Length: 120
Image 1 (cartoon, rainbow, N blue to C red):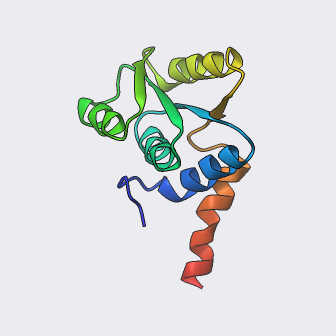
Image 2 (cartoon, rainbow, N blue to C red; image 1 turned 180 degrees about the vertical axis):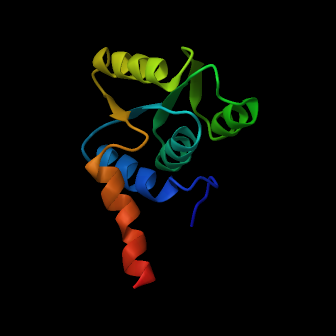
């Protein structure tokens, strides 16, 4: 149920599929690792272009996993805040990309919440 191995797969898959239904073709995510990996896996499955902006602190193993999912990876800044600022800048410069945050979006929460129904 978590194809990439990331605990964020469920929410990201829901968010990316919803954005695609709204006409988005490109996904741009800022991440320290897991969110970018989940967005990359979902985007690949949906046939979408995915760009993940990560800070310099991101481990090589995570960069390799994200790239293996077909995403373009840009290393930017000393911390996640700098990477996130870059991701938002790229979205602002694009006509067809959406920002995919690592945690603060109602679409992510809705996707993650499907776990509750399964537990019940």
